[in-house]
Length: 302
Image 1: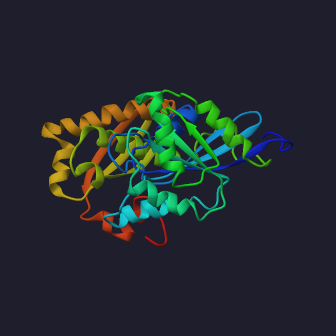
Image 2 (image 1 turned 180 degrees about the vertical axis):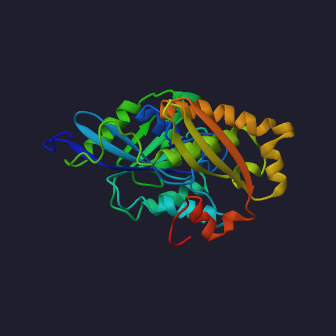
């Protein structure tokens, strides 16, 4: 642990609509994949903490689910989880996608942000996708409706201006202790991240209603004496027809999911793994509080 003298530390929430690049930004900052990415809306379901540590500061970033109009208990859990982070942190990063016009979802978030004393940064992502001449008007469309401590354009994917964003964040942090060891980049256990890496591959390989109906529970991570790691995980769906799609003809789909997931899990665990996947039907699990708790979506008021 580092000395607390002149060492800065604090908590920073990433908030925004679905698919604005919060997870991409967090993975870039911490230097490895700790939160999954896809082009499907509502990919992130839980609050995920990413830890950035240097010799002079430690920033704990909280990646939140995209704010959307919930259609089931799981959706309400996700939105409540995101909104619930904004009051108890040192800085809020409100991410927007500059390729999309300001909309009702952005205004809903800005309305929530007006009620807090926490400094709010407007972070304009995907600046590599537009002409620099377009940026002033985009900024004006947001600053005319909300008050922001800082306005910072970035490209989370390319890394453009991310170091400048970090410098501004640090300037708002108080002096404080180091909360986590130098090498730790996430507060979530291996079981959670392994489940998320498997779910990411389901999102990438399936379409229509499947991605939103899937949960993954890692049931076993056992290390053998020969260095091989056995990983067993259950993919949960809501319908029997969805189970058939996940398994695929002759088991091809679940095999492809396993092959892709195994590569990421091996990078995470640092060992060769043997991955076994099963599929289970749990009807309407997204509407059942007991199932939400069982599958890792825990909140008292969903």
